[in-house]
Image: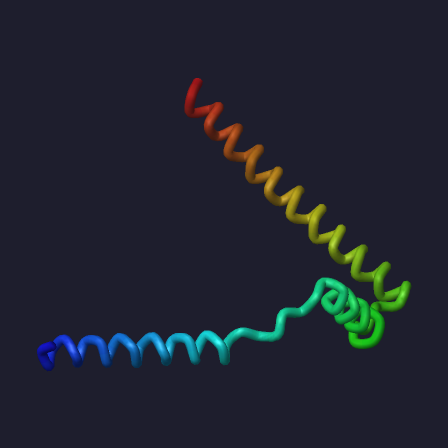
Length: 90
């Protein structure tokens, strides 16, 4: 066997070995679905700071006000462009 063939085999074995080692160290522990749901429940009940009823109402009013504002704004621009195109087409 030539030196070149021996070198290729050595490199191939080394590369395969390092890839296998890397794959083994990167794989996280497989979490079961039950563990996942348990973690979600803990996060939602212990870590999340929920708004009070008054804060929730205020946020809702603010969001609705922005939605109405942008709907009117876009509606007016749409009407303006429609009238402009109608005038050009006539």
